[in-house]
Each structure stands twice: as C-alpha cells, then as structure tokens.
Image (cartoon, rainbow over all chains, first blue to last red; front, side):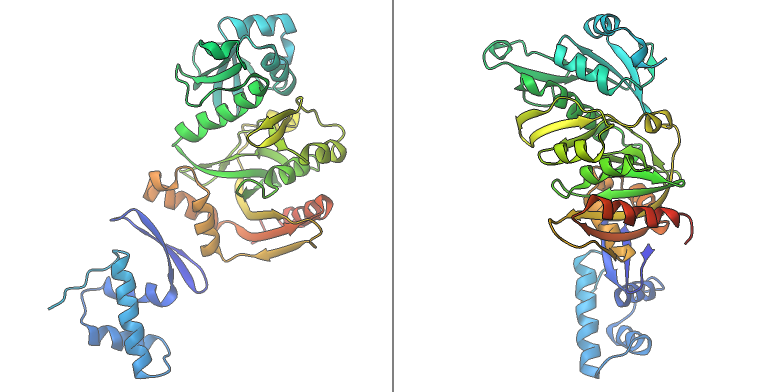
Length: 80
Length: 305
C-alpha cells in the first residue's frame, strides 16, 4: 500500500487491479482484515473512528463503502 | 572504442554485412542497413556510443527496403527486429525515424525485467526527474533543453525502473523532436547536433537531437528517484509548479506505463518504491528558461526530504 494524506493506493493480488481508496475505505478494509463482521459491527466501528453528521449519514456511508469495496472485489458480502 | 572511430567506409561496410554492434545503456543492439540515409544519420547521432563485437545482441534490427513493389513504387522502408516486421512500411525518407521508433519498440515490448514508463528521465545530483506525459505535452522539448543546461539524459522516451531497488537505469539515445520544437531547440542549444528533418510523418516533421556525450559516457550510472514532474506546455502561461499528492501521482504514472499491469505485484512494488522517494508536481510552462530554472531549484535540493 502507498499511503497519502487522505487516500491510499492498494494492490489487490486476487484481481491484479490497483485501486485508489479513501482513508475511510482503507480503515474499513483493515478492520475487516481482522475478521468477518456484520453490518451493525461495521457501522459501530466506522462511527467510533470517523465523524458523521448523523446516524443516517453513518448508515448510508457504511452501505456505500461496502458496496464500493464489493464492486472492486476487495470484500465479499454474504447475504442471508 | 566508439562508433566515431570507424571510418565512414568501414561503418558502411559493417552495416551492409554482419551489422554494427553497439551499446545503448544496458542494451546491445546490432544494426544492419543498406540505406545511406540511415547510415549517415547513425554515424552522426551514435558517434559516441560504444562499438562492440558480435555475435550477441539483445536486438538484431534492420532498416531495409521491402521485398515487394514498394521497393520501387512510392518506395518504403521496413523495420525488422529479430527477423520479424512489427510495423507496416513507411516512406523511405522516414528511414532514420523508423530506426528510432523501432528501437523504442524493442525495449518497450521486451524489457520486462524493468518497470517501463512512457516518460523522459533526466538526472541532477544523483536523483532522477521522471517526466511522464502523453504526446504533445512538451516533454521531449523540455528534456532536450534540460540536458543542454546541466542535466544528464537518461532517456527521452522510456523510464526504466529496476524492480529490485527502484533505481532509474539509463537508456540515453537521441532525443526525438517534432514540428516547432526543432527550430526552437536549434536556437536554444546552437551547439547541439541534429539529424536532417523529415516531413509528413504521422507526428508531423521530426528530427533527432544527438544525446550529449557525457550522458552516453555515464550510461552505467543509475539514479535514485527524486521527482515526478507532469509537464504541460501552454503558450503564454506563467510558470506554475503545483504539488501532486503521491497517491494521485502513482495512478497517473501507472497509466503511462507500458507494462505495469503485466508485472502484477512486482510492478506495484517497483512503482511504490519510486513514489515513496519522489516529490510529484504538475508543471505548466511557456518559457523554457523558466522551466529550466524551476528544475534547477528542485535539483539543488536533491536528497533533502
């Protein structure tokens, strides 16, 4: 990973793709690298590590980040 | 022994028979041709390059008339590398540019032990400035100016990054100029040596400027990364040198690479090594003197990070 002030460049060795990610996305990836988590845990982590305007903002950002990381094949979401 | 130490007759005899083996940086090439316009420009622009004995070469290349009607009718030339013709034929008067474009193709297509960026590279105080840029940005003109104002030429076209330690490996060859840059550089560097200009190429009018002898002599000296400069010429624009975040610069440099994707994680690690040691800037300029002065200010601080 190559870190900058607000972003990082990450190499995905599964896909061979290189991604420019925001700091918040990287922090979520690093959190998920510790082990799988459900949505409430993810939102709780993001809420504790970053500032949000409201609970609604936190929830929407959490969903958006997860969708973006899944689209980049950086995470897998298991839907029950 | 350098190529200049061969007599004109001897050079041409070798070009027309077993070929002339010569070194450009880390590569050995063997050139064969019966075309006088190639021989004369080669003798002029490659005079300072080490002459070697065969039979080994990284690339065996020929510039030759094709074996079809185009040998005589609207005559063309072909570039042949190791027995294959990777390009269509081009008009015969473009024979020397064809050699230069062909040699660039040989390196960019084959030298995958390096991470290769489409960029000019120059050096001052042991540190390299890499100038990645699409055609038309003024990269080659700026490179040509800088190497006549105290910077060493590593390459005007291909940045070779050593995967093991991210050092820049020289490939000093003639600097390709086009259109208005040709008379501009002839005025800016009256001591420089140029090939004859060739018109009506796909890039317009082109000419090659001889690499400074010192740059050729120091082709074994690698350089540490120092700066990534994205140049853009804009007529009449004041000089601006704007920092670019390392992460953004990384992505832009990767986009200008011939083989970044192909190298996988090793390409990423090599480029990461370069970017961690470099400061990155966007440079907009209209005056070569102003741009050179900006580079000199950076060069004076080489190694101070």
